[in-house]
Image 1 (cartoon, rainbow, N blue to C red):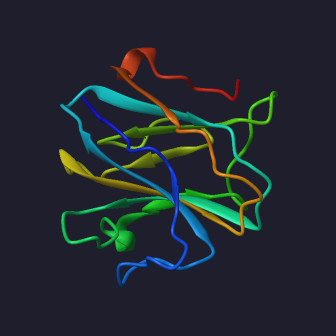
Image 2 (image 1 turned 60 degrees about the vertical axis):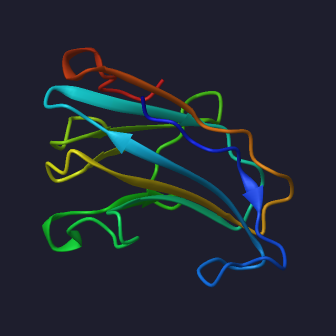
Amino acid sequence: TNPVAPPFRAGGATFGYSMQDECYCLGGFALEPGEALITTATHPTCRFWNLTLWNQYMAALDVEYGRAGINSGAAVPNGDGSTTIVISRELLDHPNAISTKDHPEGLMSFRWFHADELPEPPVVTVVPVADAPRTIG
C-alpha cells in the first residue's frame, strides 16, 4: 500500500523542518516495476502547493536527472479543479507525471503555503502502468 497521513497545519510545532504557515500531508510510496501511483487532490485556496518525492533522508530524488516534484505553477488541473499526479518508476506520458528515477520506495511530501483551510487528504491508488491516465481529466 501507499498510505498518506491526514493533512495537518504545522502551527507552532514545526519539528525543525516545517514552516508555521504551511499545511502538510506526508506519505510513503512503494512501487514495483510496471506500477503507477495516482494521486488526486483538491487544493484549498493557497499561495502555493507542491508535491515532492523524497528518499528516506528527506532529500529530493535525483534532481539532476529530472524534476523531483510538481507544484501549483507547473501542474495542469483537471476540469473540476482537482489535480491528478501520476508517479511511477519511469516517466510516463501525462502532463503531471513525475518519476521516482527507478527508486522502488520513498516518501511523498505535500505542502500548501498559507492555505485558507486544511486540505482534504489526497486520494492515492496504484494501478498498472498500462492503466495510468495519459491525459487531464
